[in-house]
Length: 111
Image (cartoon, rainbow, N blue to C red; front, top):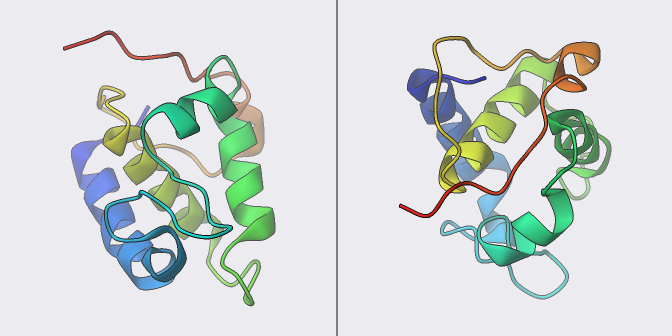
């Protein structure tokens, strides 16, 4: 679904474009929700990765919606999946919404 290298690119993009609102540790603040842990799981458990990608692409970043490339949004999504303990794989996450519809976000098993 994503590779560790892909998530690392996403982490750098997140720090540049998202951390000012959602914070570096993904805990969120004010009207910017946490992007890791139970808040994330309540929003996305059982939903396709496409839902996360589309929400990210259509609402972020604040004041500059759509300012990232489709690949950069996919990179950020890969980082968010890694931060929420979804296992890495051997392929990068595609920015193709049709492909992302085929992958479901499921609550990860406890370590």
